[in-house]
Length: 219
Image (cartoon, rainbow, N blue to C red; front, side, top):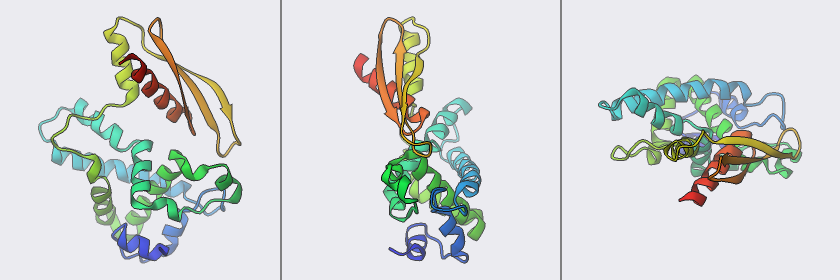
């Protein structure tokens, strides 16, 4: 699918300046005119639209509960899931080395691109264009009848507290790969109750994977 058709059919916007969307899908390894500045803006637009939407959907919830929902919905992992669900991966422009190193599978890269595309929508069509896409693409992740989603690290922290232990600790035990596509291995530990390892293309991804693995062990 050509980029203009993708923007029109998947992002729901008739682009006036297609160059914005070209830049939004371009990884730094591909060229200097890349998505980094757009990702910065898109992250803020996503946050504003999501905060507005959650306030509408859950008018009786307290700030702390809304914050849990917000944090999960704007997380890099959720942005990456959205990117994969709508087919963003097929349109990312990567340099050969980054592609060979598997950057196309990185939550950081795919999440950054979807945020950059949100910025492009905002700049090209205003907040309404960005809002339409966000509410459509994130709809499967919002369930008005569900409890607020919890991050694995928060769940592990609460589990440790519930067993009278100090908070979990996280240690990077290995880092491999080139600078633009590193891979981290992290060990999560709860003193006296267990430890587990997790891997990811960022320290945060690896910590989350380690927390999930440890939670599975102690269930």
